[in-house]
Amino acid sequence: MKIGICDDEKEIRELLREKVRKLYPEADISLYGSGEEVLAGETPEILLLDIQMQGKSGMDTAAELRRRDNGMILIFVSAMDDYVFQAFDVGAFHYLVKPFSDEKFSEVLHRAVEQYRKMRAQESVRERKEKANVLITTGGQHITVNVDDIVYAEVFDRKVIIHTMDADIEYYGKLKELEEKAGEGFYRTHRAYLVNFAYIQRYDVKTVYLEKGQALMAKQQFKEFVRSYHRYHQRGGRN
Image (cartoon, rainbow, N blue to C red; front, side):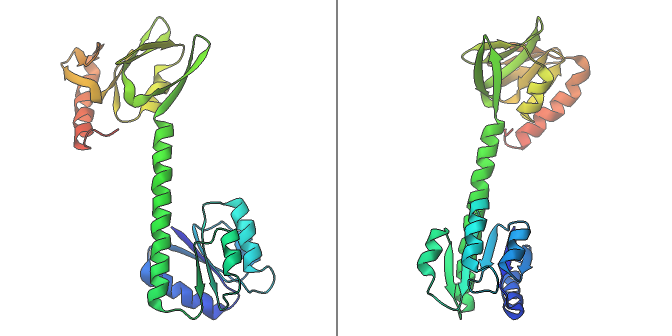
């Protein structure tokens, strides 16, 4: 978590840094003496920004930052409340008026960090959903298949066949690419078979029996398959 502090007064920068450090010692804290310095560097996830500064004002700085990164959490810190309504125009999270108590600062920063963590969690969910989808081309059509729906896949006659509970989808491709996309919830039991742990009913040294169909087991893959299958269940059956 990167927290930036921008104020043209060194004493204020240092004071705010100590306040942040006490609350979040693990945070990566960056100090800026002007709006120009903020704009020249990497945008922090949370920014404490003074408004009245020499050079580019905090409001102008915020407007430019917002154009670059709409997800940044912006907290204005000012000795004047004249710009409260303008702060809404740049999507400010809060407007702290100096002087403020440690309790107030703590409350605002805690809420900002909570908002940041929620945003990160939402991004993580979106990334997992995107990663969980495989786009394939078959019969001149583009089809999106969710990997969680794949019971197993096999190679036959130079084609990959994806078996779901409802359909069998053939396309020209490489099983290795599907294996990499599918993740740890799948295992390559044989050079021609990729199985989803979630659909396994039973197995032996020659065959994996699934809720729909079955897959061959290569003798040399059996021990590592068993270890991977056990790890899968230790993770609670999560990919």
